[in-house]
Image (cartoon, rainbow, N blue to C red):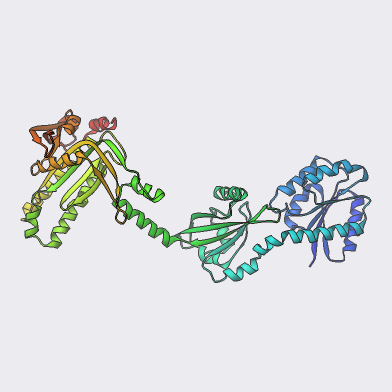
Length: 491
């Protein structure tokens, strides 16, 4: 097999030597010539097995050429032989430090040069053997021919050296077609993700996994997981990167469904903690507003409605409650039979929670009243609701191992439940603590005091009637106007 040598010369004398060299190589070496300025360009295009450099007049430009050859990923491993004049011994050390493979002193002995070139060629083949063992595309092609995985060999700068047939199956394009239509997120010169991976490989990392999204030929998107493995030469320098890509679109879809289900069960912040850490930290909250809503006539409805109709309507009400509290930044805690429990001010703390929960209560009460009027006109059974709210300190956390539940505990929960129990149909009953937050903005009716069971506590109670007219945008006092929203934004 013929090998290529690139001879860089700038003198007629050396040109004659180049001609002599061509005659004596007898076809085992193909000789190409270049001047100093085009050395790197020709080395990149020819990829020679050896470069012979005449250093008749050593200068900074020669040093720069050696640096450029050594720094470029595609030329750094090409051996360079320098030809020096007898009086240039002092310059040899500088060039050797720049990566020079060998040198000869002129006048040039052709036989010695040939021996040096043969020696360099054998040494270079030996050093590259461990790399070639990993890089044989033909062998890799046989292994990967029938796999759905895409296999690519890339250079650290993102240039693609080779891909298997699985690449076309996965992307729907041949490599050349894909390059024309898309900028690959990993296999490109401007990929910051690849630069990060290369840095990790140079620090000793052995395998790196990335996920990225691609666009298939028909326009559909796929999620791809790329497992990147470094390939080093005998000197430990990063030579190339082997990438094996797997289509994880279905896995991503399942993961998204699992995430959505988790978010339906737990608050977003708590779900994120569980996904990242496997646990969620329990916390104590100084001021939280808890609301209970309970259907006053549910037991009676169970006796006159079918199971299907009863559960269907209950679900309709609960879904509407979920929608209302979500718009007011209130967190649903749970349903207990026909009772609905929610709280404001957690898991993200805020100071506006007494207002948020009360505004949500007003909307829920209006929805129940509107539905009751509709049902009455149709001659259907009417659902009646009581609401109770109390503000105070609670503890919150996740319990369970198979069925996670985010729950809250404390006397505040007990008092809120008592406020609902002592309320009336179609009324919102709040404690004195909650009333202290609301008194300047809501119209309320004092109801008296209630003795708490098993405690000496006596709790004042108030009915919340509506927002005061100056803070409401509707006649019923349900929805806050801009003036009140500005006040609310300050909390």
